[in-house]
Length: 131
Image (spheres, rainbow, N blue to C red):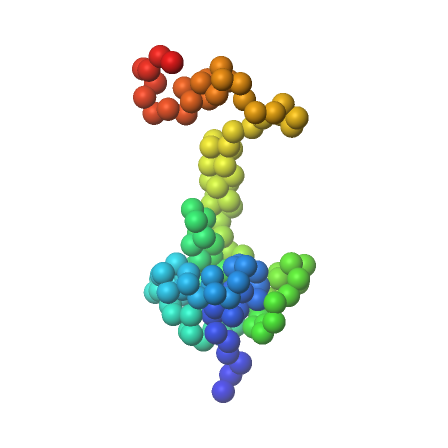
């Protein structure tokens, strides 16, 4: 029998998910796919398999280079997987974070009542309201 490993264990070992339980739950929720088909956590992986993983708004595409049974340091992860995710996907996520993030200078403290109202005005979907 060729070298094989459960997909939930591999996803945990290469640091896609923080715990193996999260990896298994993600598989059961249909967020992990091989060849467009949702897989169970017990699905066996082989080197060369292409996996699509949805983590929040990000959809990553990975190719299995090597099977590892134990969690490895972040520096060793590229030896075990090849990231095939298009650069546009990462750019889209970065843009979304910049668009939604509120930035305040460090040390300025909490917003004043006037600043908070301005923030609420900017964030409200109804721009016709006067506050």
